[in-house]
Length: 212
Ligand code: OGA
Ligand code: MN
Image (cartoon, rainbow, N blue to C red):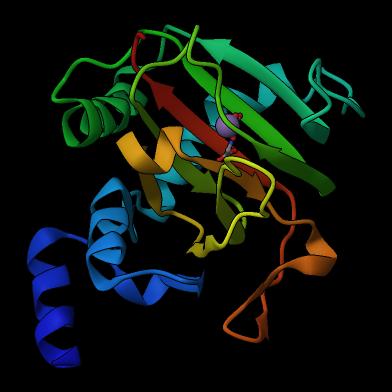
């Protein structure tokens, strides 16, 4: 059964071993979630990572790390938006656009540099500025992203899932995972996946979104 699921995952380009569910999930809810929150390992090569960073670093390294985002969701970060890219990096971003957006991503790409001590707290991206899909490449470090069902009513949320986002991977979060769950990047000290600690260093994410 597991072999079959692995095979199915391979065919669909999903990596089920990168998700760990917690709380109460039916198998059909899990399947739906796995469609709406995909992680593709080795989406970029080390050479492509280096190419992206060569273009990002000169701009982002001039900014100080900030301690609090406008909505208090992010600490220890710096960020920028970029529209124009070298032809070499454009190839990578076009691949994200095709894979996640059927070629229709927003022209602005969001770069988020999270310091080793940085953290992204649980939030849902604003529906005013961002459409149904969010896709991010992880550079420089692995990390753990936690998705938690948004609480409706007085009871605490009973469904969550941890995703191991390996360096060089792409995640594609859409629909249910994007609207019905908060997402967060765990702090360095809390970065554990399947009871193993995940070494989280400085991480740069390259995030594409679509229009609302
Ligand atoms: C965000 C966010 C996740 C990431 O900027 O809203 O959730 O992968 N970023 O950096
Ligand atoms: Mn977000």
